[in-house]
Amino acid sequence: MGVRLFIYGTLKRGHRAHPMLSEQRFLGEATTVPSYRLLDLGWYPGLAICEDQGLSIEGEIWEVSESCLVDLDRYESDEYEKVPIDLLPPHKGTTVLAYVLREPDWTRPDAGTCWMGA
Image (tube, rainbow, N blue to C red; front, side, top):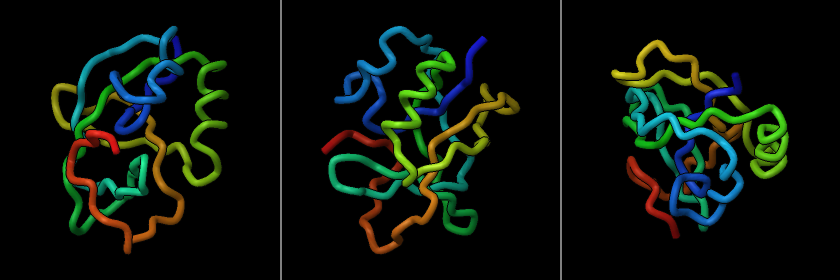
């Protein structure tokens, strides 16, 4: 069994980096609890923890292999860290990781609740 990831940006189906997940398993669409914000970082979004004024972010859950995870870590760079996140039903209680910005730049524009691409 692989690692479950919440995908919310360029790795989602139909987006530019999705081919990185071509050999991985799609588990379904999901929405976070309202504790996060999506920041518009240009051609990609960044997920930021925002307990006070957070929103529910829409994305996808993927089960990825360890070797894929190594490639994704490289792709996401040290700008992000993998942390467990909380999801709304029907995925509540499922252990899922997401790439979250280490140091969010709150001056960046808000990207809403669902990244549509740049």
